[in-house]
Length: 243
Image (spheres, rainbow, N blue to C red):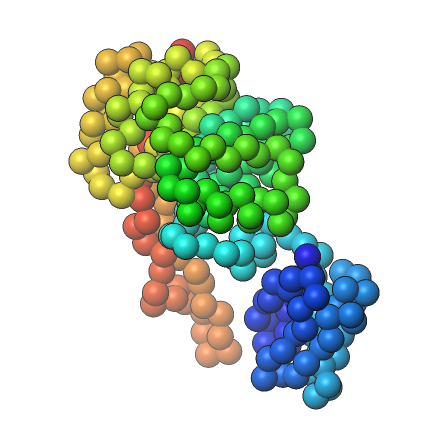
């Protein structure tokens, strides 16, 4: 796998045997495959193209997807607030393109493990391909409905991005280790209210819901200000802890 960036800052995920071909020129696949991270290649038109060290964030931006994905602003909050570390055991559902599973697997490391459930066969196939192409060995994709049962136990984190997650909360509670976290991603506040009500009945602690809003700052010669467009509401993150 090679990740290239042209003079404009546009990135490209190159497959084995694939030539670089854009309006900036052509670079043969042989030259790309012999290059090392940090090298500067030139197209037949003399334009510079930079070889980047394979980076998970770049890969997730460029990889195949057939659905919307969680953004780094939300995934970062999940990792930071739950405190998962090297060796943590995690369950994730639904998988989608595999974005959350790969971010979590990167944090828990080789001694940790992520199991991700995806009910749709086509999404599961895409996720498995994305995971395999980046080289993760600590992720298992299960093409089944997690509502049929969570097969794992003694978990540090269960993350659910699916409709009606409260239907799973009793079983989820049993699958978590004491001190483990349940995290839910939902687009509507009505779903959040149900989660809090069910979580309270089951005895979860540290319940909180957050909305993460990202606003980039625009820096220009004439002045600096927030961009007029921003990443506002994507979904609510609800956290609760088994005690």
